[in-house]
Image (cartoon, rainbow, N blue to C red; front, side, top):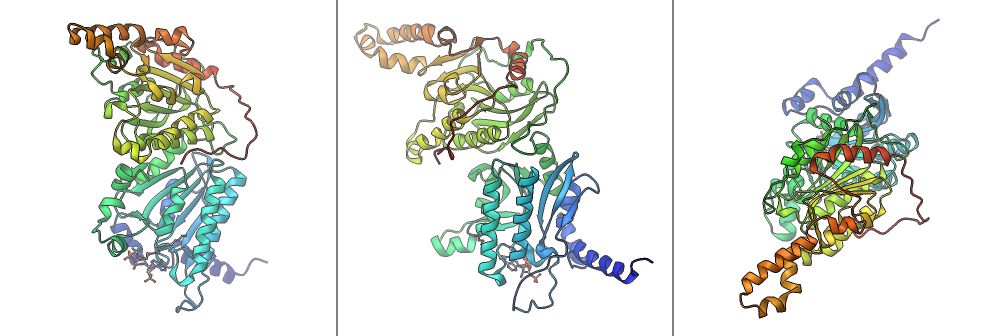
Length: 518
Ligand code: HXC
């Protein structure tokens, strides 16, 4: 006795129909011609070969009327399931544009919500590939409710499992709020748009002639709005970014990140780091050169590279330990912290803390950005996010003060009093309330005015102030600095600190949740 062949044939036919999204070869070829993978090809290329287990392949739509009776929407326009990436399970959701434009109907939403709920139970990261015309118009409020379920699951998963969104086609209207609620967004450079209101709606509402390149494309979101974290040249590149990103992340908040500890620490100094510091204090230091020498070869993934370039954030390994790096970039806007830099740093720090990733801060900051636009734009509220994020951290915090460490910005960037576990300062560090010139003008105002040669007196008093305060030793004397080290010693001293902080435990007071400034 064996199962009836007819039943097997039927299963095979149903599978084939779903696997080709109910489309002919011509539609798939047209997609390929545009340089796009299909929803399933994206998954199969993302996960380890043959490891994807699909759930809900035989689900179909729930549309009443509109000529949909007998219409076939395989999987209801979304492919969900679990696969392995580098042997670790991940939950994947991939909207299928070839099935009614990937529009989100009630069953489509239910599949997404259930997959996300399961990801929380299993402790698996969620990868959500967005390629959809949005709420399925024919399902009306049922599809809007579906979005509600998706958003709610994004929020419930926040801080529990890492959530990564890929914008790989249209992502319009309220649909954009799902990626926005996730931890990292990657967008394809071409063939994708993300917006709340499209050009026609903007034109009708405000009269503005807005072009997608100004507000909806990957380039616009990466550099202007800050809504995305990575730009991918195509699907293949997007997949590589996701894989690299996951290589730094734990699967959930109960796990440690995938450290690759070497059995022997490299304890030798790196003399080249001394050359990274320009002799002239006015020449800006390029923080990328510091990062390059600090991290293990090939173990660096910059996040939001094109947004708020005065603040650099990214994942790295230092002697095998996964870290998040938060660094001022003095080569851009003198490294001042402005509104965008505050948002960028705060979000990254909170992510690292949620997922047990130690933070290494590289400080060279003259202050928060001065200016009317910054004040009116709420630099107080935005800058406070950085203070909040650092102060709430329970992960190890190692800070290196390279040069300027002035005022509130010094305190904000992982200082000892905000919770820094180890704070190193280079001999070139200037830890003070403000720069010597500004300080001398204020505190010696009368002496300068009364002097026979005010200019010479000013110079003398600036030097005097600099001698007293613009060095790391006063701060070290009072215990605000753990140790003064040469740049050459930085890599191995940071690595040693990270090793010794791995057992850090913090017991916090019970509370429902804190209230970070928004
Ligand atoms: C139902 C949709 C659809 C939708 C596309 N389709 N969007 N069906 N509901 N929202 C279907 C089309 O009817 C077509 O079906 C197929 O998908 C492909 O669409 P085309 O228009 O032929 O493709 P293309 O020219 O590439 O244009 C893609 C598009 C366009 C730019 C996405 O379809 C479009 O503008 N769609 C509407 C976008 C939108 O306004 N959505 C609502 C956003 S508001 P056939 O059967 O011919 O293949 C929203 C609210 C969320 O989502 C609220 C959350 C709280």
